[in-house]
Image (cartoon, rainbow over all chains, first blue to last red; front, side, top):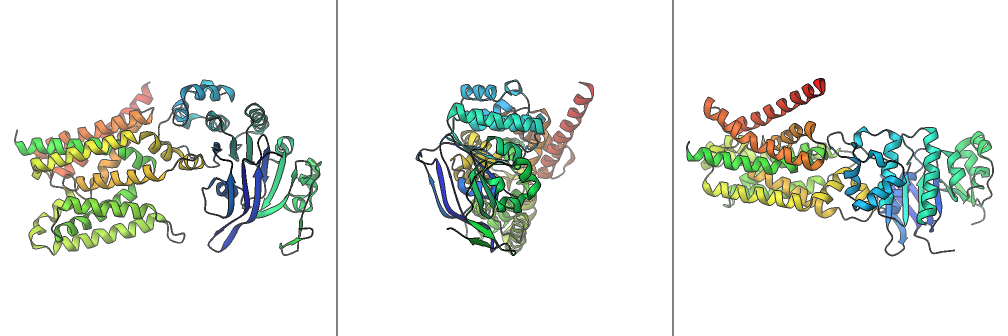
Length: 245
Length: 264
């Protein structure tokens, strides 16, 4: 297996005495799509931010030397007081040629001269993705890139992300709430609830007891299909019990 | 026209022009309140500067820079950052006022520190304001792209490996410098108006951040002659007149943009 682009080992994040993340380990390899799923408040966004160094954490994070990251944050507040065209926004981060290629690649080249504030949710998601790939990153980190995108748009955007991975050979670490599309596109799924509940290549997690506990049997039944490894169980109080280390 | 009026137009105009672009960032980053508190601390700085025998502007600049850097890092979870910033700023204002009031020789100037005394600018003052204004404009232009990346989404820049510390610190120092040099022009209580009103006036007509900064600089510079003319004709205090002129430019801009939208 190739060397990971980025590897986090036993990351913990606390705030005000509360564990937001408890010894979470995670690695993304080149050309791999790793998807984080988990309920609200399970620490998905915090984990991405910790891995990116945006929040303070304990544990170790190793990056491949010279790693170039393209990041799409969950919260991108479009400020109405800041006039900015799509083209101008991308130009802040990438040279003109790369900017045009990226906008064309994600299918929003015609939005070049429009104001960021005037874009629909789906257009904004594509513009943010274009910005992230314009710098030809080795690793794409996408935090709920589907926010504000309708259902049809979501599937299309996931296909686009998978295509970009194939073309650029980059690794992808993404947070998502849409289990269907996740299962269709992810190479590996990490199910998070402050700690790693279960993980496996995308067709194992849905049968995991921990997954069932978090998402319910119905979601699992609809998704079905997945072979994996679960190294702990939960007591009724929610404590973790390891059964095979 | 009298020399003092020319000096006032030049000093206030240059300062207003320098406030425009930096004021855009104050607006985009929602930092008007921080600017306000920095200006309040500036009054204490002026008092301390006079007390230890250095010049009031140097004292203001020094304390304003320290206050800006400290307050920007405020973030205790149980007290909102804005409240903390407000506490520090108002303590500075209260202490500064008491300090200035106890100094015999400056008592008559107290209102000048609060609302400016632009008609009393000396040629040396104008030269200092000019140097500071051109300096602030030059640094703003130099750091334009990192400042803008930080204003749009600091997390993206930081996640992709940009060190945001330098532009952030530079921005706070520039705000503090404008506050210090604004003390003599419109005073500690009104200086933030020159930071936020011209960008607000520029916003409706700008499609790019660069255009907005340029228009804000123009609006800030224009407020000086208009306000001073108003003061000259009515004998009203000059500093507040400059601020009112900026407000009038804002009102005219808002009205014009509404009309434009209605008929275009």
